Image (tube, rainbow, N blue to C red; front, side, top):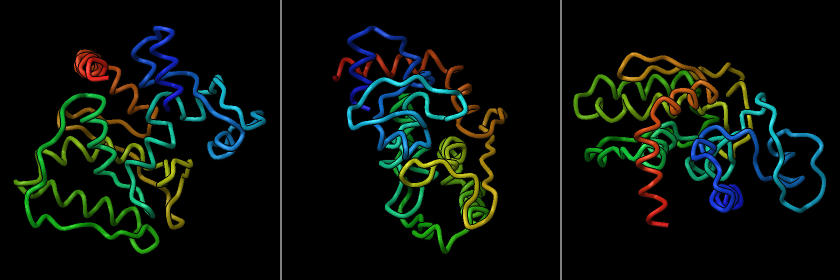
Length: 199
């Protein structure tokens, strides 16, 4: 991720590459983690990506996907919050007190149950405003496990990565999420300018 960022700055690449680049920086070990063939050796290098790898941009990088998960399971809320905060510059407020938590173990909680529990937030007035914005973004990344490996099922059940934003737009999976984010270029660009000034 640091090499990806440094390359973008040093070579004056498009700011949109942070969302939808067609390349990444990997070595053999990371390539195997991503399921990408043909990369040998320990040296990190720029590699062009086939769109089917789902790895373009920051949201396909294991580093981002891991820090937005818990140790043994993903977090729809953390991933959605990260997108709002780090990419769109629209962080949600802190959660209300005594909000409760979801099971900490994917092996005990099936994906449909996680979705059902999170959708319960939409029925609570004190939760709806934030979760209606965060959760759809996070659900679209559920194909990535807690350390960023691709998966199509969880506990032998197909993953439901469909999502609906408060404005009615629907999408499914990381590729469609990126298309949604690319429609937010003004918010994204303004936020990136602030981040670069801080950097």
